[in-house]
Amino acid sequence: MPDFFDVVRSQRGIAHYKPDPLPEGAVERVIEAATRAPSGSNRQPWRFIVARDHETKRRLGELYVEGQRRSRGSAPPPRPADEPPHFSEAMADVPVVVMACVERWPITGGEAYRGASIYPAVQNLMLAAAAMGLGTRLTTIWQHCYDEVAELLGVPDGWEMMALIPMGYPQDPDHLGGSRRKPVAEITYYDRWGNAEA
Image (cartoon, rainbow, N blue to C red; front, top):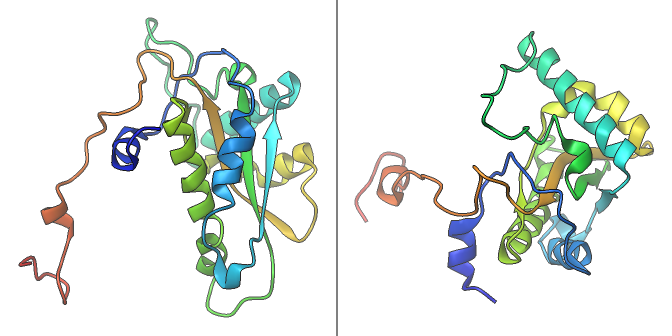
């Protein structure tokens, strides 16, 4: 297994995927990693829908593009001719697409509490995928078509879809690793906002 910090440095959002099948047991391994995440009061209020069916993934891609249109008021810009299709255009060919869902329960203090109980699991899933050489991307723009996606995936009342995650081997020009990040010193304060001295 690679060093944890190497995995953290390699994980990045992937937009282009090879259609190659995933290794045997890969989906189960990354979801098992997701279930090791913390959640409020250890509720473990998550469910993961793994879309493998070609037609289901094709329709998810259509709804993703429609979500972009609804969000931005126009279709996405055309891609360069020498660039492979963005996963939204070729979602049917992405090996699997995972929808992370969280249980709706009465909470006090805002919706952030629900996110705090699913997004650590999503990050675990994405890091586990990166450790296996697989690319992922956390997407939410499809939420502009929330009802249509919920109907397509059969998500019942009492559950909320939070993140759509395509998963597969990166295709050029995408790759794992090498994403630019701001230096730690630029984004860290000590004891009080604005105090950059360690």
